[in-house]
Image 1 (tube, helix red, strand yellow):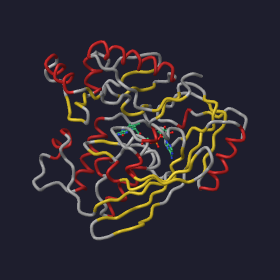
Image 2 (cartoon, protein in one colour):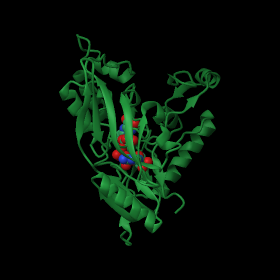
Image 3 (cartoon, rainbow, N blue to C red):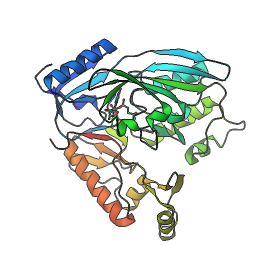
Image 4 (cartoon, rainbow, N blue to C red):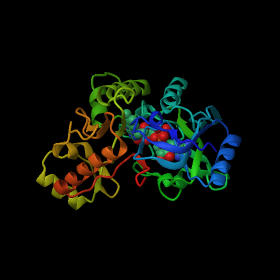
Length: 338
Ligand SMILES: Cc1cc2nc3c(=O)[nH]c(=O)nc-3n(C[C@H](O)[C@H](O)[C@H](O)COP(=O)(O)OP(=O)(O)OC[C@H]3O[C@@H](n4cnc5c(N)ncnc54)[C@H](O)[C@@H]3O)c2cc1C
């Protein structure tokens, strides 16, 4: 296990400066088990990283930062109605979406251009434009960090919910996901009821095909979201809060025009709208800022994780004071106490 501090700045899309006690990239299961055994022997906890697009390093971490970079996809079952794929965790998510579309395996179009790896996708049950990953997952394969044992979780065992799963709960920091099985329908009715997507597709004469949905989602995302390659960010910095029906009604009476969406347990509010109403769009902190075009996206302009989290806390406090609900940070934060 190397003793020198390893720079993590280039490993996340926020590019926040931080160091780790050790880091290693492994491309297969034997190398993964060996790295986990070395970390145990060195007494180091393990932080698993994919492409670092949903991670905040608030400071240095006394840990092994590990990336499982195995690639590969295979058809493990198929019939007239659907195909089941096993995809290695290190595959790039958007590349998989494009490949599925070309093969005629449908359903993932709405999730096009979400940054990151296949292995990270189940962690927060990625979602966009009215679709979540969960219904397409058949199983998740993983290796337990504590002892290197393999385990397979069914969709039900993954306990998927809005931006949530067992991997953020009971199995948080406990496993390395090594592959995901997806069951994708061949014939598929595209999901187009998300307002901006519906609008984008409105001009089309025929009912949209999966390819039309893919193209529209790609165009919408390119127009709306800052590219992390030029503007370091982690996408949406806060989850959309869910409030009970009575609270939602009271808020709607007080703030006519407040966007609200149906959600299990009540109504989902639009975090970006709440932040914007509080006047935060374009606000700046020490080398960090709220993106001027998108209030839900915090960006780094050379600042560090502490400055970013300080800005996030000021936003959380002001939204709580104005609307009575506290925003939850979406990316995973490491090194906060360092
Ligand atoms: C511009 C932008 C737009 C985005 N848009 C969306 C969006 O529309 N919808 C959405 O849901 N998300 C979105 N995100 C967030 C992000 O793309 C997803 O969360 C993605 O799944 C993260 O993948 P990653 O490989 O970068 O994971 P990382 O950021 O490296 O890791 C995220 C978490 O997953 C864990 N993890 C990663 N790989 C593994 C593994 N193999 N085994 C176990 N744990 C692992 C990490 O420990 C960490 O806790 C966006 C991010 C950006 C920068």
